[in-house]
Image 1 (spheres, rainbow, N blue to C red):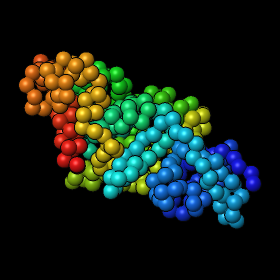
Image 2 (image 1 turned 45 degrees about the horizontal axis):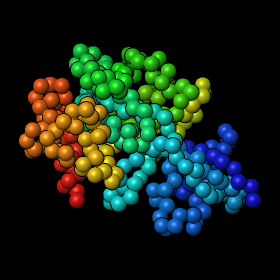
Image 3 (image 1 turned 180 degrees about the horizontal axis):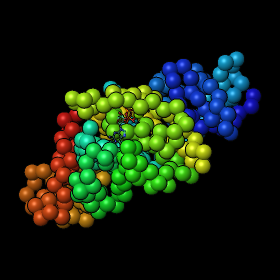
Image 4 (image 1 turned 135 degrees about the horizontal axis):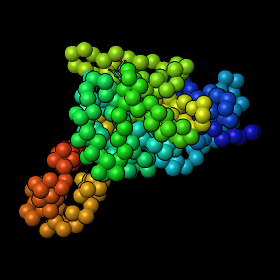
Length: 303
Ligand SMILES: Nc1nc2c(ncn2[C@@H]2O[C@H](COP(=O)(O)OP(=O)(O)OP(=O)(O)O)[C@@H](O)[C@H]2O)c(=O)[nH]1
Ligand SMILES: [Mg+2]
Ligand SMILES: [Zn+2]
């Protein structure tokens, strides 16, 4: 039996597509591989796997998943398991659009927490700049860059930001994630016009996308590196997050919250809360504090 190592590029209902030294091999999971009996959420795009390429007539077998160094994950639909959307990726490109659909910071803040927990380097991409002007998004850029997160502006219509985006991707591994219809696939199509990537329309009334991309798929770049396009998401849950952990993922709270009167201060109702004082004084941005409160509520209402 000859085992080799490959990288999972995508999965369909029937097969995993595994890149083995440049050749794509269809694989299945060896039936009894996973002890808990469920393979639903176990092998992810980006996983390095050990395979026996000639295990059966039509497909190879995945025997083992090698340890992951990073992952983008969320709770499974029932919330009991962790669903890894993609693994072993360096950069998380959080894609939002200025308009159609409008920029919403709540999802971006959830992505930043997920990036930190999954060991991914975040960058925010604000696309569809042609539908507005840079002045509208400057406050967003200023806010997130003050937190140490790079923000780049793009448009597939004017090709703004094209070189910057390409520079981010080449010779690295990256994943694009965000709401449906913000232009994740369009950005890749702008950079790599030969790729067969579908682009959808945005609903003219609701400005929502139509979930055109239905599977996460990893593409090798001609210049070196890999990029993963993912289906648009409606919301991003935080897997097994304890409410008291949340504050540590808001970097701007870090030095301030130590000075709160109560050691386990949640920065909501407690007196002598330094975080709330900083929000009033403007040193912590109101939008970020609102995100924090919203996420905390969602964490406590689930239990
Ligand atoms: N005006 C404008 N429209 C854009 C831009 N980029 C993409 N679009 C349009 O936005 C719509 C959605 O684009 P997609 O690339 O399919 O969006 P997506 O993020 O991949 O969506 P899902 O696959 O559903 O998650 C299409 O009609 C694009 O033509 C842009 O920079 N400016
Ligand atoms: Mg898409
Ligand atoms: Zn506090």
